[in-house]
Amino acid sequence: MATIIDGKKLSKKVLAELKEETDKLKQRGITPCLAVILVGNDPASKIYVKNKTIACQEIGIDMQEYFLPEDACECELLDLIESLNNNENVDGILLQSPIPPHLNIAKAFSKINPAKDVDGFNPINAGMLAMSYPIFIPCTPLGVIRMFQENNIQVEGKNCVVIGRSNIVGKPMAQILINKGATVTVCNSKTKDLKTHLLNADIVISAVGKPNLVQRDMIKQGAVVIDIGITRLENGSICGDVDFDNVQQVASYITPVPGGVGPMTIAMLMNNIILACKNRR
Ligand code: GUN
Image (tube, rainbow, N blue to C red):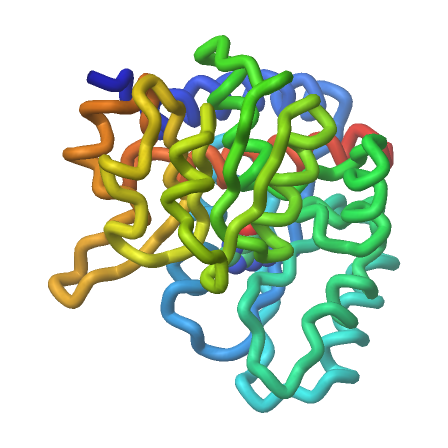
């Protein structure tokens, strides 16, 4: 039976450590500040932003919210980013994705000052990670690595399969694992025979958003299984990509959804804001 990695508990520990950091900064008269930009009315994004607000309040980070309407034009968004880049009080800038389809998200992420890019989505930060000189590492993959560290899960020399190739999770996750000396396979919805790849994996990380994609008969005995999928079911509950009840019988470690990687993402955002603040001031 797998050990369940409790992301909620670990995130509380990380947030308590980070609060000590913000307390120290406050003694020097410094309060870290995050600016969040939300464009349009995506309901899931509103929930994510609310959770980020709560975490900022808990550990003493100032947060400014900027709302743009669904039909905002590109220049409005880019001008807002420019003004936040130039605002001396702002340490971190987060553009909540997704944004409405008429806006170019790659262009917007590229506009964020790399020194304030606490999500790590600016091409400079993505490139530095690819070159093994990371500055800001995207929060979700960073949260997974912290879970490994806390549980003494070694990555070097392991066969890792990442399912999903998004810029936000799959790609940076794969880059980090490559940098740590793992042998990494990145699968996606077009992959032929996912099961063959998964059966060879010591570590499986799924970030797709497809309930029950990862089944017990696809997992090698003793593998580590990390579930980053989030799907809201019709009854309102949230579930991951992994058939948790069955897979936990063969895995050595497993993360639940909810209460796994999700809370760690927010804790790592707080980590990156404090890092940006310290680097800047
Ligand atoms: N949308 C889903 N996850 C994230 C994230 O980590 N950061 C941002 N900015 N948008 C997201």
